[in-house]
Length: 286
Image (cartoon, rainbow, N blue to C red; front, side, top):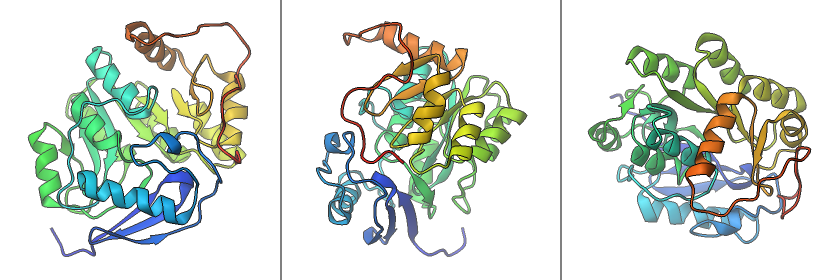
């Protein structure tokens, strides 16, 4: 593995650009939003969307489970958000609806994960990864847990390439998280049976939101106004109201309905026009 600068870039809470080097937060950009109800429920809450509190949250993650360090923990069985992308994928695996997921992990890049614990351990506590430095120790833990690191030399994040590798490895029930609309379009065109989950949608333009909605099976709304407007009116089902997830296809609808069916949580089911508002929304929606 060639010498590389130890650097990780994340677009985290409020889509603030965060740079981590050598296990320390060295840069926190301005968030695009002022308030997020989901961030207030983090293990280390962000009560106000300020650079200082966002940085403190990231520092807590580094200390708690080694995020963006060689000590990164990669396994977890806890459910952090009811309808988060990793929670939906983990459920799909336990229910026999999925057998692999293509996700991104700090310290490794694009990863093929075949177990719910690996999906949750990687994706349940980290999102918005832009770039990363690969660590042999993190790659080893992922591989020992049954995962496949697609680009171990570079730690590249390439979901299209990850989907291709998952198919080549013989997986048939594949899900992938996708932040870039062009990646969603490419995967849909090349691998139409892959379950595509659009994530990290805050700040998408109307055209980008339109492209993502047309290609994805499920789309998380985050703080995106265009996603709520475009996905909401076309969705088959909506899960949640403050930060909703929209099912755009029958495949997406099926996994959400099955997750609800097997849940012990009380659920309100009501035919209505979508998007359904209510609750405390992120501010502003952009």
